[in-house]
Length: 466
Image 1: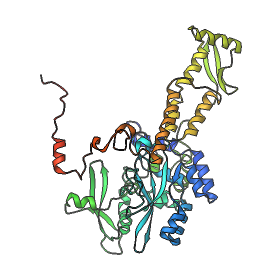
Image 2 (image 1 turned 60 degrees about the vertical axis):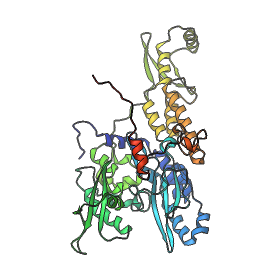
Image 3 (image 1 turned 45 degrees about the vertical axis):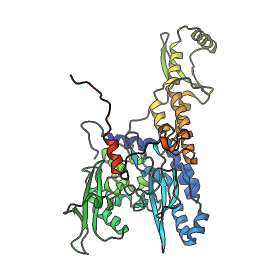
Image 4 (image 1 turned 180 degrees about the vertical axis):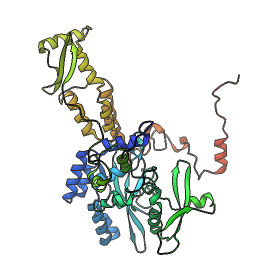
């Protein structure tokens, strides 16, 4: 049964509802699925806006045929649209978490550093298009792109222990792994922490031990995995002893996807989305836990705009590829447009057309699609509203489209390695500055003397005492 929220939809669920509506459009899913079914994993990645930064021939020359065979098998099972569906996101817009490296699979070799198949997201200043990149990373650190802010896999965001979130052959495990039959009491999946912690510690080469769960920006829980004997299921309990901060930081971290309830499951329980609106692989796994019909309002009929003009109700609709007032004679419209150009008042129909061109009611939907990189979907909305032959006028709609196009240039500069930091940041990578002009950021490697000097600097006063 769906939840009823007394104070409105929670912000987190509202964000995920918009993400599920706009972040992975149906056209992307269909194209990527068709190419994957045909054995074209690279084409599937291209359809899902995933750049491929790996060369199988170079991998074979460096690591051998056996490893490249395993890697190729994983790439053929990879569903990049499903991966995008489950990637970590940030509030309030629900965009991909920037500057992140996520491990998808780990390949061990005897006598060599393990190799990871990873997916990376660009930094926030270069995230136009919401593109991702697929690459390999060695634990020895060789081959990492120098222009990426965090090339090493993140311990908190990892999917190598959760292949059902990107492997098309194991997506059926989703309901069991996310404890879909559990009680919907909170957004924390505490019922599955013990089983997920056992997988985590086993991957780290441990049978039992302590681990941490991040509960907030400055909050975490330190737990330990215990079991009465080998025949009983493991359980979690708070660690009895207090560890120093250095030891706590070195403990394994329960991945975010294991710590929290699956967003799709929360949306289904709240009645905010129907099973038919989910990714097909997710929908097949969670079909028994939600309603089949979409929970959103019914779509309005596609009638022409209606405007009260000179005491009558006139229609506005696309004609010959351009939005026009169809109840006015073309000669009359030309005279009225000339009158407006000379400073005269415009017809209500012409004012309505001008408003639709500059700031239409569908502008929020266009902005959502552009923010998630769905340029084709945004242009389809604009063409359906104004007609394919329309010329955009100055206003918020044109500004949104121009801004999206300009920001894609920043992403191209980042991908090429020509600019490694935001041009407005004035960092060392800025051609107009030198290393002497760069002010280093305080971190744990900063010498204590410099840290004290920087922290003790006086700051301007913002008010006067009375």
